[in-house]
Length: 300
Ligand code: NDP
Image 1 (cartoon, protein in one colour):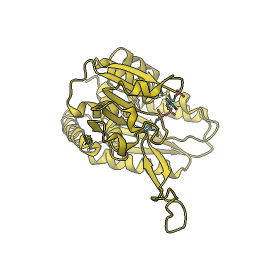
Image 2: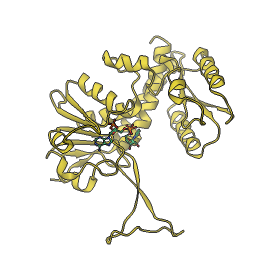
Image 3: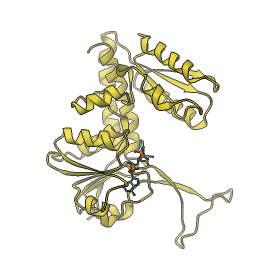
Image 4: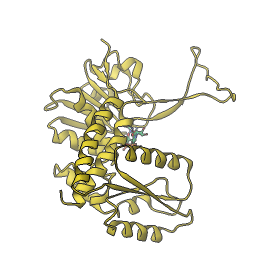
């Protein structure tokens, strides 16, 4: 059996189309979502994220602006800036770009973003809402993983769901979202005694570990739905197991997930690829959260 590959771009595209309709309707009522990004100092990867976010937002009608603060900004000044944005009625969502310079407690500052503007769903108040089944602002990657499960169209109720990884941004919120859908989730982590025994029980397996191809094909139950959240950069090897070199003589790198894709796809019924699975849906969840944040601000 060869699994159906779940196309993240296609799932993201459908959600994007719904969002465009929703944003147009909001604009007709006089509401416009405005996402404010805050970046401290110069960072090449963060700049790339910002450019991509801006493109994604503007393509569907979300206003996107960037506040660039100097690299020597102190935590107190950044906190003041966030508080100012919290009170700015023209700003409906705030995203703090990572990484922040050394000496700034990123987690502390992030939790100071007002809950109704917290498009990354990281504020403890929004995490708490999730426990109560309110899924309006949930961490984007967790929501993306669950959207991909839903896209398969199977009955989720009662499904044995194994989540590998218990981070606050992925594993924990995924477990609560799946519980809310009446699946039976189990969360595994580095202290789990017999991981293969757990994963082999999974009707739905969600891997968020950050270890390249750690979940082997023989750890997957035949017919399982496999959602691979992992993003890992590894050296590309030739048939003899030697690194493939690029034109500069440096090892060629490739991106793989936490699941051994080639073997897993022969066992699973559905599987997400890396790249092209969770990633594109995560981006669109940020857009959806931005629209939700506007609706929360406007009491809609
Ligand atoms: P974290 O490092 O925060 O968490 C990893 C989790 O994996 C931890 O709970 C850890 O357990 C668990 N773990 C580590 N080793 C093992 C093991 N041998 N057996 C069982 N569990 C283990 O990672 P994140 O949740 O932030 O990210 C996970 C992956 O998802 C990464 O590859 C990351 O790049 C990717 N990611 C992808 C996104 C996307 O948009 N597609 C967005 C965000 C992340 P313990 O808690 O005990 O240490």
